[in-house]
Length: 397
Image (cartoon, rainbow, N blue to C red; front, side):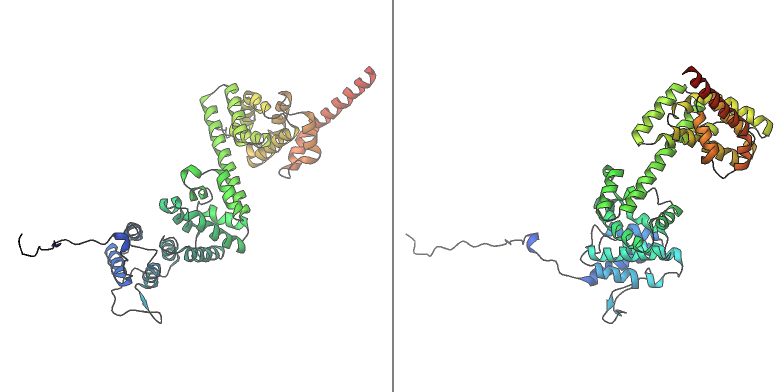
């Protein structure tokens, strides 16, 4: 046996790596600022380019962790030292709120960038959303700012809908729904609110439940109404296309009945749409003496369509009011009113009960004296015919 001591094995050239999850990243707002400022300075003053840079950088930089620093940069141009002054030893950017042009369009653009960056905490976003609602109510900014809410990532993560709740609550605490609706319509946002949700949740039912549960029943009602208006416009467009193609009336009637059921449209609303579609399906003669003849010919052709959707007395009355309004608004039709009503009476579209009710109490103020005078002889004839019929019935008894 050897007397030499046996050497113990040793580990050389080997090093254990610390697992990523065990490492704690150092909080370093200075490096974060340098990255953001450098990117902003490279993009220049193009707001779209800035938005793209910030969106792309969000995948690499921790906006949530450095939310305060990001806010300082976008508002003041750099990280603020204690006391609210810019740090002297830091590189700053001219792309910030304080160095922007002092006009409303520029402020709206900055508001979009500041309000909806994902880096802010939920509390910070809520406060900014509430402030935006107040600014919208006071008319300080345009409702076009809401387009920022339709960012695909924000919608997907549910940030957009949450922000919208706070924003609209704040707005509606200052103004009523009619004022809010007018502001939305002015910039074409009234038909886009459904985009606050991902494509698979863009239904009137989901929107209504979400905002009603959040205490915004008025907004739910407004959007539901907008959806109905949109459906009616589409239906009228389809009607006009079918008429221009010369589709058989039985096919048009079947299609309309299907749409009524699908969109829950009342017969009164439907008869108004049909009337408008029929009257806009031709180009009218400029001569007053010829336009009546043209109207009678057209309405005789489409009387079966009108008859199919005047099964209720209220629908007949609605049609009469639409005819009155149309003849008043289109001066060449002023003398055609009585002839149109008589034609539709003979075609069993309008009943004598509906005509008498319109004449006695339900007419509009528009052209009232002219149209009542036109209808006087026919109404007298209807009354006499009714009395004679009652007399004959009594004699028969």
